[in-house]
Image 1: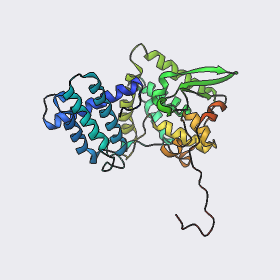
Image 2: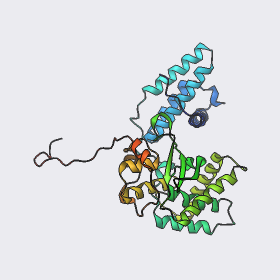
Image 3: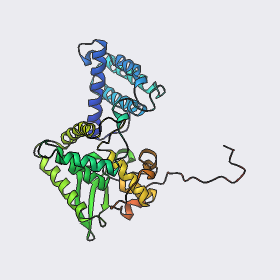
Image 4: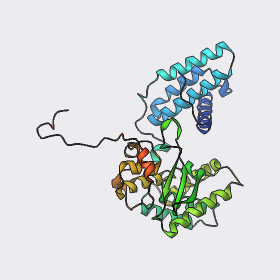
Length: 324
């Protein structure tokens, strides 16, 4: 069965991940080239690694390899090659998540969902000490402060801009994950009427910084380099600990703050650009992790677009508590 159409960037990411999977399999099994391995051998090797892979990562690996095999099958005219690729795809489809790890043991397991103000202030102070000594110290500092204010996904900054709507300052954002109904429309609007002067300066500095780097490198390259730098810098700043903040941690903290502020589930979903009111509650930090009110708001028309899926807990009548 052919999977739903994907945006070019997702296909590109899948292709990169599939090549990494092939290369590792070839290296560990002694093949001269990752492309000399039979597709089913690559699948078998990946399945053999499943016990060391978190379930979410396993799903990504399966999707990436499946997409890669589908592309190869569509490109070749050799019937034998097509049959081998289809057999590999069938083997992937037949392999469940059972046996993968509930939580990762490597990079993903060290990512913390929140980014408390004390940690953020400490890290910003650390970056201040690196100004003029590291190329990306001020860039990362600028990014963090803007992300803390808006809750954007890191990738969403590539297509974000300030404007005025009905005399109100707003940030227009092209929603990430906008394929297959996963986002609340192609874009979202963040009302900045309650933003402070320093907030607006932080946003303008962020957008100006991104525009300046367009002449030097792609947005994807800049994000990649900042992610690498933050990985090293957080460990230097915070020392030994189990989890460290990432660029995405600011979005989690923002979501927790939005919930704590008193916004409804639909309003939080609209602010985050999510299609349903369930995602923020299931995959993002909870309200108890919130620590300050947010100063951005959704627009009514986007709140109305959010699909209601979250279930509200209703206490059972007395005498039925033990029935399930």
